[in-house]
Image 1 (spheres, helix red, strand yellow):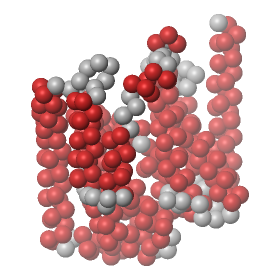
Image 2 (image 1 turned 90 degrees about the vertical axis):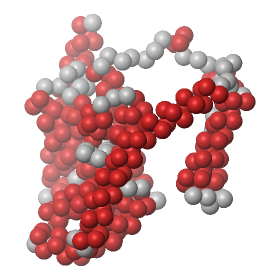
Image 3 (image 1 turned 45 degrees about the vertical axis):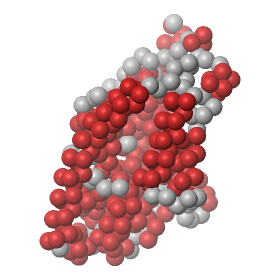
Image 4 (image 1 turned 60 degrees about the vertical axis):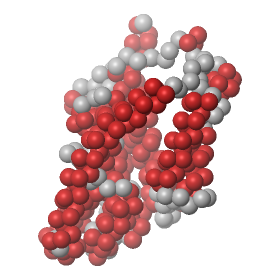
Length: 339
């Protein structure tokens, strides 16, 4: 948990920044003060909303029930609360419950089909023995070179992880892929977090992208467009594993100064790369500036102790970032003075 803390913080920081920039680009501003309800009445009306989450966590960690049973218990609490208590004077009727069950059934059909297709792929790998030959094959193909091996491992993890739950993904990849990474000298913790990250990225990576497909089912949007948007928002999860493999400081392992310095650089990188991806900051950003933002951000996310010359790359990225920020800040000041 401690090792995974910094990458997790960076991931959610990147999501927040991109959501904020996307809102700014789309002209979505803060709603009027009069339309924001007071916290007291809201909490009083919805005091029971946390109950399903409490039941879910209690059933999982104290009663040691399976995830499916725990989820059913939480769903039962939701149903009982909706029928007995209701919200804002409206309670769930029998017709509402039937419609909810129907909608849930239709919503999981896509997930069932995706899971079946993924099962075929995994079954072929296991029966043919191809999966167990991956470790040797990956090391031989990469010729012992780290970057090609990591690229191949990332692709293999995404393919093998599609449609599988987290524990299943990790157990499979820890058996098939992690030994190849450890074989070339990668830190054990970094290797296992690397495969876990990319195994779970199958949730938002086409063509399976079961997480994106589930979200698309709930919102009624196009599944593939949702998957592409999810990959764009989740860009950091595709980059940060390479960074903590290069240097364990992002996994809380190393000199405190370098841990803080790499964390600070990665935080700034989240902002810079997000600006380049969204294409907006104080104004729409030109293509060449978007590229410059992304390049400077990726330079800063590189740990200082990754290899000889990493510090110089960080300094160059910082200089480019300062120039870009100064340029855009100057434009913003001009706009405020003129407006």
